Image (cartoon, rainbow, N blue to C red):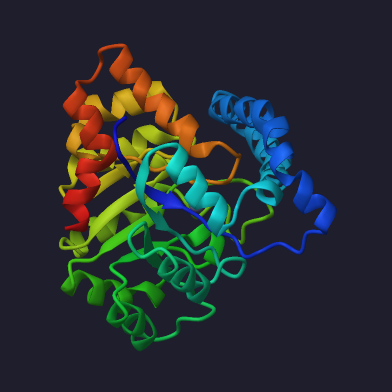
Length: 302
Ligand SMILES: [Zn+2]
């Protein structure tokens, strides 16, 4: 009933599926649904384990996203999912080399009223400021930095020119926050929010959106959003109790809906229900709910 703007989704390139698999694809989706729910619940429990076992659990569970991607991960799947859950618009995020910047730009142009392009600051394909300016000149206003994926840590001088430029343009930068201990990533331990702290004052005109609220250690992301005016929190991967704590500490106006669809399957519904729960339990008002779902995002995108 309440419209949503989702600040974090992915679209994957078409998979080379056999015609048989294509036929069973939609029926597999309902088969995997309960599995998805279990995984979403398990994911928010991993943080409760001691650090050494958590690393092991993340290593073995991260590849479990793959079966979901076979079933639901492409442009048509996303639009269907958005229509089902009343998502008006979604910010599509590249994940090079699997999901390139050019691919995302092209996909978003297929539904310009629904999908918003973002560009990944990717050391493999972006070596100088002009490479980024080219995307800005094509209308991109949202940029993503993810050191665990790119392998280039926040303290590297590589980012300086790009961030100077984006600061002068008052752009939005989404930061992946949180270490994820999996060999699928180049630098699993370079994701903690503490690495980005110098940027929050050095680039005061950039709006920094902390994706995943530092994942398994959200208290540090919440702390940063409470200290800096230009730091906001995205809800993806966080359970209801953490979102409630974040609201209480930083205020509703800094919390934005994000699902990270399609990583475990059913991400949009899961994240939507987690926030609706706060409204149903009278922890937040109807206006708060509207703000988290869409109004705060509209404000940032205006
Ligand atoms: Zn993501």
